[in-house]
Amino acid sequence: MSGVGPISQDWEPVVIRKKAPNAAAKKDEKAVNAARRAGAEIETVKKATAGLNKAASSSTSLNTRKLDEETEVLAHERVPSELKKAIMQARMDKKLTQAQLAQIINEKPQVIQEYESGKAIPNQQVIGKLERALGAKLRGRNKEAWKETEDAWLLSLN
Image (cartoon, rainbow, N blue to C red):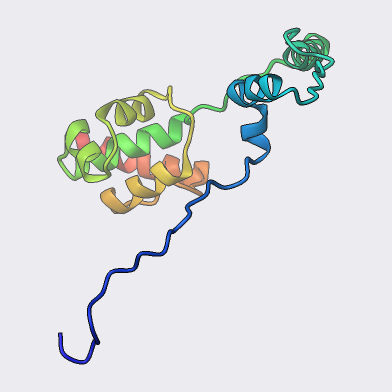
């Protein structure tokens, strides 16, 4: 400890104060009770829709009305039959099970089952993973090209 100087104790008092209360602390029940005890003036204001849950009900009624007025049948787009056949064919060409393919693309086996059964809602990310894993183009295929490959595949089975 050379060069530091003589060691001595500092006997001057140090005062540590709390920060001034912020807006959130002023709304706290403890702060309100402390202000009442101190005799400070307290103003209480009730919000217009407090406890009535009006915001949720009004937006729901608008959505309900829009749905009631809708005449078109709305349904999610499903996997087209060309895509599900192409996935099955490419998977069988690679001699993979649905579970193995799912593991390769880091998805659940249920996802592959849904795509091959046509129940899945198409997700371009998953289709891209399938294309890379299977080494086959699944998107952008026109019906004539699919028909030619399907005919060739059927002939190869005979």
